Length: 181
Image (tube, rainbow, N blue to C red; front, top):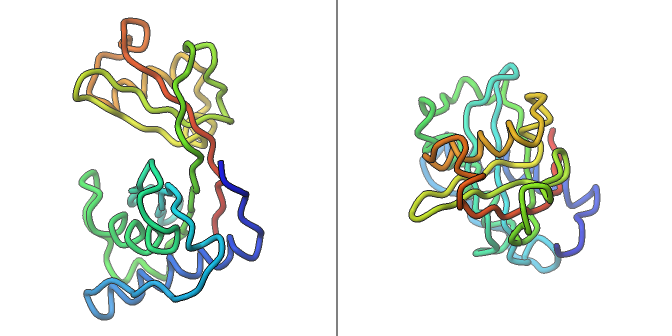
């Protein structure tokens, strides 16, 4: 993983995500990323998770570093609010009740086996053929899952049978720096 973000950079990311959402609901357009340099201009994978009153309302991201972090945060905040197909799009009136969480990801690496997956430390990507599912490292902790349950849910997310992790599915692990408002 690249260097960790400082607390100041974490706050800047959260402000940027909120500004992106406010701008989107006011104009229908994406906020332009600020000019500058430094960590927020490094290409990083990241997910933006939105909750209202503790209920998930959207979670979308890039698992790989395809864009600068600030652009990824802007794009994924809007996508989490408007394009997560598991939920109705966020309504403008929900903005004041919204909590934003950002996960900045390290690069995924193949796990030697399921025993390498550390609950609470690793996010997982389970894949087989064209099927692929990703779960962030905080998910099993929030749900009280053990490793097997976590891997089974990764398979479900990929559209695979729950035991596919035992039968040829590839498992990748990654770390994440997770912070929220």
